[in-house]
Length: 506
Image (tube, rainbow, N blue to C red; front, side, top):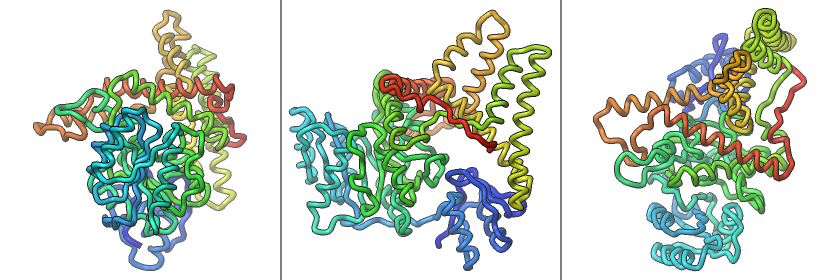
């Protein structure tokens, strides 16, 4: 095996005996021979660590399988016949004209998803100018259906279809080496999908618009700078098909569910993971996408993402719940809110309820580890992390699916009545707390940008100040939540708004 590098958030305890992290998050106990390598590989700042014997290779394989680390593959350019590129397009041919020059030398199939007559003529002209195959659909089937049609056409057109398929949206432009970085991961037979980082780009000269500057560092399709294994319930639960490299033989038939016009990428990834395939996110490969020009259109797109929650919940029950609670976590949350709004005996009662929830959670974790012969300190750590995860999920929901509650709390936080004001302020703090790391990172980028005398890179633009960065994040979250609410009300499916309640402490 090549060298491996830890995924962000993975770490060891008790000299490598216990390893925490992965995707989905979990804990494992290692045998004594495996511990030195795990401790070395999962040390913060360790970089690439290469196994040198059978024990270390087996340990590296375990860490990779659990998503605690990812292998490091040197870039390698694929052969022209190894990859078929599928590009769905609907509407203007201008973005397509920017994309196709970046795909010279590749086998490309463009699928016109029933564009208007004028747009269709321009799309045909652009495709002819670049010598790429064009498939014209008689009726609009959405991006997933267009990709299905392109995949079938690419298979029929070649005597030997390419082993890999790259899906690219028409409004994207990949960097020159994106396939070079992604292709080597498929040397591992279990890997079915590898996704690059998708970042908004500045399309004009100068610092860029506010939306472009936000999207270049934290866009709706941007999953961050840390490589991950992708799995439902993990730090990264899906990857967008705006840019994706897949193993053709791993794709189901049809790859994209007909009728799903939004969320078809989430559905595909979850089905592949359920079938036992490995999906990876590798941000060292980058693809840039065009940013919608106005706040209204930008917000509507985020709301459209939210409307996918109901059909996805129908196909994958339980995965779209905005939060999952255990009884102890619910007691901690309720107790803290009572304590925030009460005085004297009422505040004491709230604190007692919250403390009781923490004690029950800790006790359950310690007992479970003790019964299994595991160090009880690990059980206590897992219990605390579980509580933190539950409370963070509530905060996220208050900005997204439950944003009307968060908005009411924000309004009440300025009310003259002291008790409602105190409770409302606690709710507002709960909602904003998960945004602190992201806002702090935005502030750091902004300060660094202002102190630097170099011009900002053209594809990123100038850093956005933390106030506007946070404001746009809140708008994006509320727009997504509005889409979820609209879909739930329209279909009368409430599972996407209800929290799930576990019967046991985590």
